[in-house]
Structure formats: structure tokens, C-alpha cells
Amino acid sequence: MCGINGLLNVDDVLFGEAASAVQLMNRAISHRGPDDTGVWCDPGHRLYLGHQRLSILDLSPAGHQPMCSEQGPVIVFNGEIYNFKELKRELNGQFFFSETDTEVLLYLYEQYGRHFLDRLNGMFALALWDPEREELLLARDRIGIKPLYYTYQQGIFAFSSEIKALLQLPWVRAELDEEALYHFLTFSKVMPPRTMFKGIYKVRPGHTMTVNRQGIMSCKPFWEVTYTSYDDWSREELEARLLSELRRSVRYRMISDVPVGAFLSGGVDSSAIVALMCEHTDQRIKTYSIGFRDAPGYDELEHARAVADRFGTDHHEKIVTPEDIRTFLPRVVDIYDEPLADATSIPIYFISQLARQNGTIVVLTGDGSDELFSGYRSWMRYVRWYPYYRLLSRVPAPLKRMAARAYGTLDTSSPYYEILNRAALGQEFFWGGAKGYKESTKGSFLSASYQQRMKRVNSYQEILYFKRLFEAIPKHGRQMHDVDWMCFLGLKSIVPDYYLYRADRLGMAHSIELRVPFLDHNLANFALSLPGHLKVASGEPKSILKKSLEQILPNEVLYRRKQGFCVPMNEWAGDIMIGYLEENIPAFCSDTGLFEKASLMQQLRALKSGNTNYTASLWNAYFLIAWFRRWLL
Image (cartoon, rainbow, N blue to C red; front, side, top):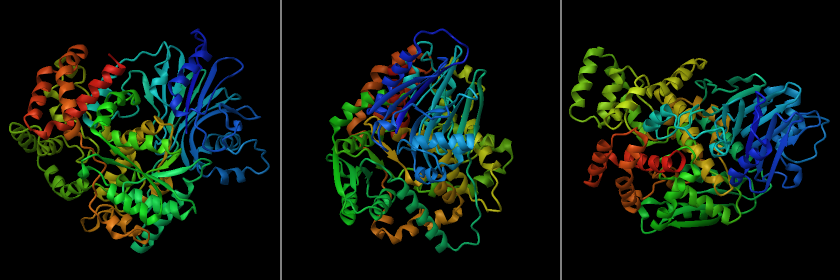
């Protein structure tokens, strides 16, 4: 795990000392790699590469980056390649001067060209310079575990692991992308390829980009989900294959030259990871859990302790207090250079801190399981309602529009109004992860001028992108279920742009590497190909996963009602949010010209009067205002 940066002077622009600029970029993301730093430039001084190293494999100076091969290619790399030892054996006769996965990448590129990416099992963001082609190749891993941002302004192409490094460059302005904000208000996350900054973009998961003396030449996928039909497999065979895939993935993700531990909530996913980790080592695994002082309904410490005792882990706990939350909230916008209105950032921040304090540099987590296996009880409502939604969709369009308008006169904030409105517009029912403001209610609080600028923009276009992608993928005779679309959208949008973004920033804030076994691309392909009805059998979320895990976990872990990673925000920080909004909404609306003060203040008064319908949307407003104050105002 590291941080990477670079500049390619496409148009021979004179802009000062390039090496100093890259060093500034390195310093801005030094938390990603506190163990070493490096800068390299090509002989013509057109390309500069920077790197901050967190040493995981081969802790010696031989792992220094940027790394050059004898034949000329140079690489900066962030991530881990879990099958690098197998790939190394394939490179028969090649001499290696290190025990790193980075060096293997250089020689794989020399042998296979850009197709070397197809051979990798891991998480990565990389930039590789081919001096013979005079071409820079950038790539981001298939699922989007590692971040990669870029900008091409005033003749200079620049990239980095984090936006804050790009903002160190004097010609890169921190200017709002208004369309990105519009979609953020719906999804509570920033939708790729945009960022919240105009002119700064993120490489989509599973994509490559090539840049040369003519500028950006291509940006295209090198991987996509593959569906396989398992209609002739028995449920027992599928369960055995599933456990085998997960076991292999966990074993891969324990490869490290530094200590490896796990976050443990006591739920299905983290408990399964811990159980399988213990199969692959005779050493005690360090596990970490979070609780909340005098708020037992919000933590799972009791369940985590039971799992830790069962598997004999070296267990550590952190009890978060109201004062911890009050101290942390102002700092979260320094960590997130893209806004993310997510209260669970608080426990993840403190559990990452706890791991680092106890000498654990690599941590395995259970992220991704719920999206792959339909693990949310809220998704079950969509499964039940989809047949009725299809019937509603067949109603003549004028009647649907009439019904939506009629219901809207009663309550535009109701989810039933949103359902009627989506049906009237002929939209997909499941938007997955759209936790913010409903599309139909944005107009109530956005300024007239901003609405006018966004009159041709609708956040459904973001869902439609993924829907068309889903429909274009060959299904190879597999029968599709509504759950299949939901899980696909979960993997392609919710996972990388919400959960993985959150995990990367909060882990890196403490210089620890978070690994996600459920998001191995082979396991993801298999999970998405599993028959949808087996994931929600008998109304039980992720049913087939739980059945497969009965071999290693007791029923009290597998079938306890999912609690989720909750935070006592209303009880502990509600006053902070309300006070901050009361103080800042007027100036924020005036300074940005984007929002109507009267509408936001009305929502705030409703919340203070006990109307909890506005809690989530006003938390969005709280984090958004704080983020604006830090990065744009």
C-alpha cells in the first residue's frame, strides 16, 4: 500500500521546478507511505514520477519506488498482487533483485505488454512508463479497491492516489463541478468519472488509460463481470465451491512481511474471515473491535468477543466516547477530499487507529459481502415489490403521471411518491445506495439559478449507465433474477465509490493497508453468477453464503439478525449537527448560491421538532457544508 503521483509535460510547458512539484504531491499523501519516498524523471525531463512507500513485502531498500527495469520501463505502484509468487515462477530465467510484487509487474509488462493486467490477482493503481513507446500506462484494479485520479490542464497531465496531491499544483484550481454535486445530493457519494472538482477525474475500476505526446489517447476497460450458468449444479456443490473460493481468497490476502490482523464485529462476514485466517496460520491473529460508551444498542462487542474466544485471537477493543466523536467530526473533511456523509467513518477511523497502535499494518475486512450476496434486509423489500412495480409500469403513462402528481400533493418526501414518480418516468426501480435527497424533491431546496444550469441533468442517468452495462454483458443462458441487477449495481457502484473509498481513506489516515477477501475478482464473478433465488431463499439475506459457512461458524453467528455498523449519532452528535447547521446554513447558501436558505432552515426546524425524516438528508448537508469550508470556500 502506497501513494503514487506523476506529471507528464505533454506540450513542453514551462511551469517551474517539476521535481519540487512532485515532492509537494508526495508530501500531501505521505500518510499513505511513511516508510520511504522517491522521485524519478526521464532523461528528457518530460515525465516525473513520485512515490510514498508503506513497506509490506520486502522491507529492504530493494523495494524503493519509482522502480526501473533493465530494459527501460519504470513503474509506480500502489497495492498488492497476491499471486505475484506464481507469476514470478512463470518468468523463467529472469533475475530478480527484490522480493517485491512491484518488480514482477515490470517484467510481466515486458513479456505480455498491457495484457499483463489480465494475469493479476490483487488490488492496484499503477502508472508505468514505456520509454520505447514514449507512453504512460495507468490502470486501476477490477473492483476499484485502490484509487486513481488525474487531470489534464494547460498541457500537463497529472495523476495521484488522492485529489489533495493534485491540488498542490499551482495550475490546478479547486473549482466545483456542479453536476457532480447534483448527483452527490442523490447518492451521498461522488459518481465516477467525475470528482467534486471541475477538471479532476477518477479512473473507473477495471480501466486503463494511455497518455503520450498527443495527450490522453485512450481510457477503456480491461475487465468486466463474467456470468456463468450453474443451473446444472446442486445447491450443495455451489456451497462447497463458494467456501473454497473464499478460503483461497483469504489465504492469498495473508501474504505479507508485516503483521496481519482483522476487524471483527461478530457478524457473519468478519467472523468468517477470522475463522479462515486461523486455518492458515499457527500464530494468534490480532482482531479489533469497536464499542460505544453507555450505548450498548449500537455495538456488537459481546458478539465479537464470543468469536474471538472461539478462535483464540489476540483481541483488542476501543470504546468510543461522545468526546471522541466531537473531536473527530471537524477532522473528517481533511481525510476526505471528496465528500462522504457517512457516520460509520467514526468507528472505522478509531478501529484503524487501534490496529496501528498495536503494530498491525495489514488488516482484513468483510467489505463487499452484502452487495455480492444481497445481505441487506432493506433489499428484501425491493425483491418483494419488484413484481408489483412491473405491474405498475404497465399502466398507461398518463395515469401514472396523474397518480404521481396526486400523491405529491400529499407528501413528496414519501418513498411511495418516489416509487410512483419512477414508474411514471419509466425508470429502473432499484437505485441502490441513493441515500440522499430524492430526485423529485431536490427542487424544493436548490436555488433557481442552479436548477436552471442543471435543467438537462437527472441523476437517473447515473443508474442508466450501469443498467445498460448490465444488460450488455452476455449471460450465457443464465436465468436472471431481480437480485442479479441489485448485486451488480452494488458491486459496480456502491462498493467502489462508497465503501472502498471510505476504507482506503480511513485506513491510510493511519498508514494501514485494508484488504477485502470478498472482493477477489474470481470470487465476485462466482458470487454474481450464483442463482439469485439462492441468495434470498426463504426470506433470509445471503442465504447461500450462510449455508456454506455452517462448516466453520455456529448458527448463533450466522443467523443472528444483522445489526450493521451503527453509530449513536443522534444521541451523541445531534446537537453538534443542529448547532453547526443553524450557524452555517445562511452564509453557506449566500457564498455558494446553490441552495435556498429558507428550505434548508425549514427542514432543520422540522428535525428539531422531532421529524426524523430529515435526519439523513441534513447529515448530508452537515458534511457537505463542512467539506465546502475546507476545500472550496
